[in-house]
Length: 623
Image 1: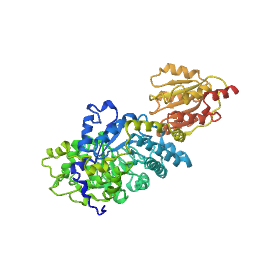
Image 2: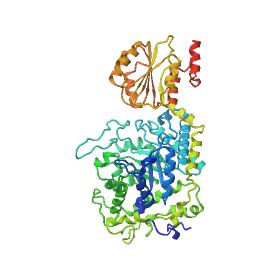
Image 3: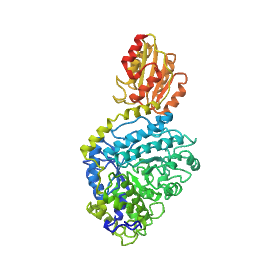
Image 4: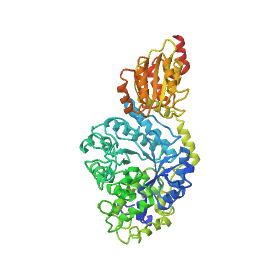
């Protein structure tokens, strides 16, 4: 086959412009079976019938799985891929394992950065486990790793310094790539969330939220000078451009470039920075357009067009995707000046064609078991610059059917009524052989076997161990009377706190009984319980700052407190630590049993926590 750039004749009819535009959209979906059968007002997810139309008739490029159990996900993905003529990119958040109940969940990844020489090997293992479960379900696109060196980023940051973030992100991506080799099914990884955290910047004082006025709606803002960002916050992204398949860009305002519009909506900005300056050739993905504050900036069509003008290849969660698609087609019409898009001019069909080329290449890389047809046809297709091929993708002739469909109301009609890439056509056949797609039963069986793999628990335990800091060994109480006061400000699942949880089980074996309380606990009952205690071990499962009356009680009991343990966010712990500098404090990023066991090891290192209650009880009896 010729590598000259001319598409092979056997491909038949080219992708219409409408079909190309559809490939740029990624729609959020729920795998919950009951949520798909009828539209729900206010739901971000399309009904089953609308989803079928978007996939089968409109031809969207991908879906973003944001809800549902893994068993439901296996069913949904197989159905979606069966509907699709071109295979779908199926994305999922994967900051702590796949964000789906039933998949393996991992502790806060920030703990990896504290594991020293072990850190990279555990990060690679984490990537292998996450990607192999994704492949078994049918997911081919991970919205991870998070490469912003900020601990506050939704509990997903890898480290607080850029160099460590970079090394751990590389290890995670390497683990995903190893899985692809082992399982014969590729996976797309994503560096997120560029350009940085919306609400704060620990590397530079003075970051702030933008003022809210009628003319200037609130928007996430990062005020660090761009020159400084290049060597701090952006360093991991700059050095990962040749390793990840996509970069996810968040809607953040950099006042140095524009006071109003986020970087995602500044025409030419992403193309200049990521492609021209950094040499990135993968997919530029714009974060969800359904975020509330964006509606105050512009309507969904304007947001989508500006994102494409900025340099995006894919748009996540466009509100009303058919309306957005129609608006993009309007902006692509010859002579369109896109007056609603800040006077930046119309969209260029050649740019859309280049984006579609990148999308098709990414999809091909995620397909396992490449057929003989793919081996013969794809190399030429992958090397074709479609924007230079008249009559194919990116044609600009007024006679091209993708550009000249009559009135705007008629432009989508051929898409919704037909104009398909049939599975019998040559282009359809190119993607029709998908041996990596498991059947429902095969997928469920394969995932079940993977979830039982022996390498999962050691990785979880290592990450939990790294998530614990501080703590000095306690002297065991000589006489009964100590109390294990547990405060919680958030509902804990039975898997996090029950009678067998280390936070309760180990102290109880040491004759330190628990007293669990929260904001609904009657104050007299709490005061009476504390008054009877001869000593206190305090464990706080917190997400919000402790109430003032709890802080006052801790100060009043300071002479009897042996240790205070905080299970929660690192920034919150650091603020609390300033108030409790006088006490033996321990912090855990996680609340799971692995983390609780590590906390107990810090406080009672002479006990073999792994031996459980019986060993702890035996130790007490010997004393």
